[in-house]
Each structure stands twice: as structure tokens, then as C-alpha cells.
Amino acid sequence: MLELGCGTGYYGMYFVDMCAEYTGIDITPENIEIFNRKIKEKKRSRA
Image (cartoon, rainbow, N blue to C red; front, side):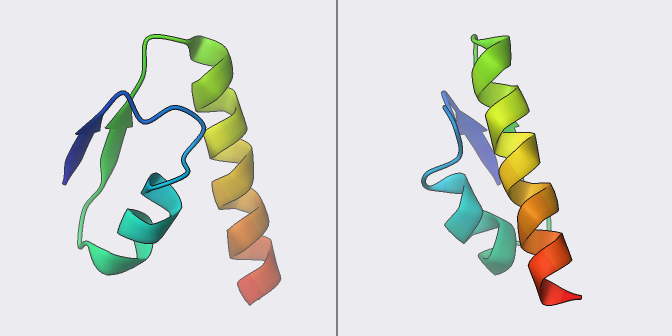
């Protein structure tokens, strides 16, 4: 799945679990940083 304008990952957090592959693209680097932090936190909470 390719999401253009993923922002901070509001929908992306759902898609990450539902898709074999997910790529989120956003024009704002700060949004990507926040989204990456959310994914790392989610992985830690699963362990």
C-alpha cells in the first residue's frame, strides 16, 4: 500500500497491520519522524 500525505500516521497505523507492505509519504519531515516514533512504540508494546 502506498499512502500519499500520510501525516503523522493516523490511518497508517491501521494499514501497517492490514497490509503486507506499507509505504507512507509526506512532504513534512516532522510528520514522518512522529509516525516512525509511533511505529517503534507499537512494536515495543507488542514485545
